[in-house]
Length: 319
Image (tube, rainbow, N blue to C red):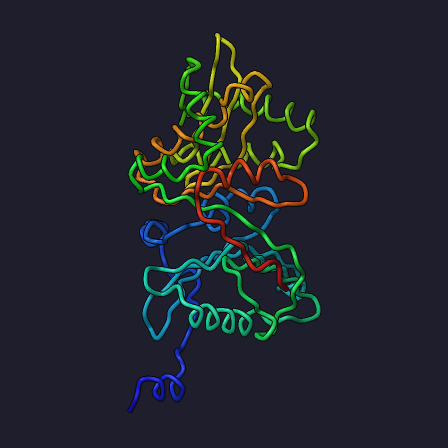
């Protein structure tokens, strides 16, 4: 029989096995995922559990009895989950060879079977793909999210040639200014970073993670060596800083700020460019530069796209 006939007659079976792995087993598989996301990482689950009083659950996705992917959800419930909330943010994540539309559809069918929409249950699903889930029983609520992924494993020459012309020009200028760069993975500059970030956010009026969230994330990332702070100084003055959170073979650009002097001399460009080398040394493969949009942060989008990564659009929010 032709393969197409067999596939139609015998559709793949998807199951989600919850909490069947111990922590080292989960981490070993998580490291194999390409483009792992911060919101699916263990420290993020710990932070959400502390701040939101949610309970994490970890699932191994089986396709035709083979391990195919991982998914982390957060739950909250009372009265034996009669009132229940379930959150799946930027997942599921797939092992090599299983990231197909067919498998993604199979997963969300099974997820909908295990957590069906009902009175008393609130669901929030942000799939890590640009996919339409309405035909699978979910309701769409907008909120498309766009980010930039950068492949850190590329040679330095390739990474530099991929920079947009203006971005590379600013970097070349910054490299001539005599900046002093410091890299901290022990949290020694964390208080300095938060103080200046909060001041910058208030002065410019942009949205960003709360200081409380950042402190909680740091609490769980620091012991794992997964927090990285970059600081740039010029003429003995600290003029820019960035925060990167690592998660297995992935990393996320969490925040950054710069003074007018730092901006005029390309401090932020220099920090992010040198960060690629630091991440490469730490065996990071994929760098998530974070959200971009045309409505409220055109300058941020231009800055991030200038690094020459791949723009990826996620499908939005479903329940």
